[in-house]
Image (cartoon, rainbow, N blue to C red):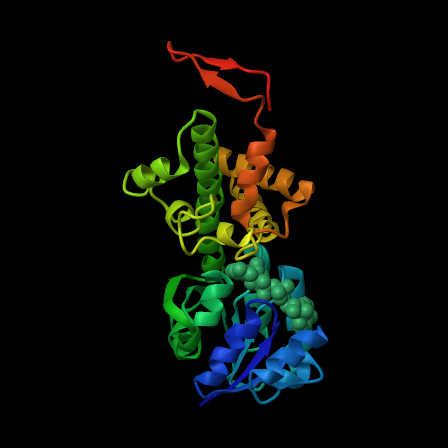
Length: 311
Ligand code: NAD
């Protein structure tokens, strides 16, 4: 049993910390939101009055915060209170530069650290089946594996400092782009008179197969696990998808990488968020694609599309 400090007890951190308690660890939590603290207490977490109080005496400090700014502010506040030899593990999704700055701050204070963002969403956080993608020294990773295990299906060492975040943003570039492509395909099929079921039955066992189709299908009633069946209640919100795509675009710009699809996906999620879609699951972008499609066309026997003039 270890003493683990957990800072950031929100949608992800709440259930993640609960799984550490279930595994027998003594978990000391802190969050700025009173409701998050109350829920954590109900889950068996001992809550502290400040982040500095939570980390004092802990063997490991886990952070699960909204952004890199929150992370760096938090490290500034707590590093002086962390006990020698403790391990710092950040599981938030943040900019690669911020992740590396956090490693530097931890290293300068004498601590081993990992960036270890996750994939699997709130369902994975609750079930303890997250994928952790870790960046940092191999020796630190080996020590961290046992701490992460009760929250994880898989813990993968992706490379040095920041490489967990690089992996996460590359994965989510694929995810955002594939969700848009799947949604466009369904809307196109619908408008040409194809049933959603027929497209699903073929694409799900053909070369169009992907997670956005077969696990979180943007059309309701085709896949049991899809958030579309729950009026697109997240899941993984469109606001968080936009955040991750922006991180990828910022990294692409800094590294001079040609990511035309990533750029377009960012613009489309930006549009969807501006239309008020941010709080919905990212699969709800199919609604935006339907709304932005022009007057419906019919296919003539020759195969050319002809607008009917009706929406
Ligand atoms: P959330 O907003 O529900 O939780 C963040 C929590 O941090 C909030 O409760 C907030 O009060 C708290 N907080 C903010 N500043 C703090 C501070 N200085 N000290 C203590 N607590 C503070 O967000 P979430 O959905 O749990 O996501 C957390 C991180 O995980 C984000 O970086 C997100 O991108 C990433 N993530 C989320 C999902 C998902 O499906 N929700 C999936 C993968 C990764």
